[in-house]
Length: 322
Image (cartoon, rainbow, N blue to C red):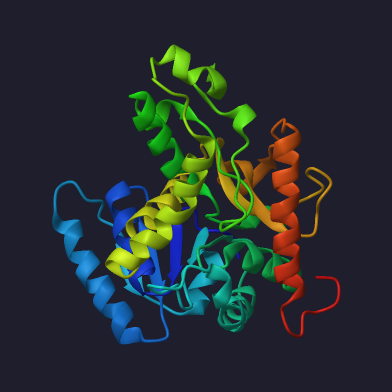
């Protein structure tokens, strides 16, 4: 079955899945959207509500419908949001691991019954572990399964640093890498604003004191859980991160964004998935970029790797070779 370019399947009609549906409609780049959910009435409600917005002049006249896993057979992109999310008071995404391994096993089994050609975008947490585990278990093409990873974390960091320097966040070049979680890190030697290195920002942008690296990284890590505590869940940021990726794929951009992908000997590792800068095109990940890390960056990368590997090894009944 050939891929129907521009066809999007969203699995999960919860808060994040519905936010992805509504956000991607605003982008006007998808003309065929299918939503799959165990509770079909919930999916139908989301589909009907979203479909009515296409009558407005600024909206694409997309086909939006409730479907089942057979709709994956010619999908271009499949977004997985199924499974429980962290709740207020629980800031550790890894507590979701065992339950979401079970949920994702059912999802991946049904997807792969119909396709291994679609690009799978993982949002369910802990997404680094789930991305690696199910790429290996189902032998899914490496460049076609990846997670939103630290793209949202990177956007948050860029916004914070941009605000400190009084510039638009889109002028900041800086990545949050590694785990989408507690061991994420920022390779400071690669951060710059229009070519001005991080260590020269105070001088060049007239700051009274240099930006505090530890404070910026800490705030980047805790802001997501803080949002969960305040409003009960997160949806806007992660849905726009997913839509940034979807747009890059559909438009065949060859842009570079940090997403969680199974490593192929980058920095000597191949037994985890973590966020590194990746070139995205209509076929998925074309290439993973190895940034020139300094000694601290290499140490931070190893800490993230070792933590993720420990989580993978903790999965009960893990098949041999994963």
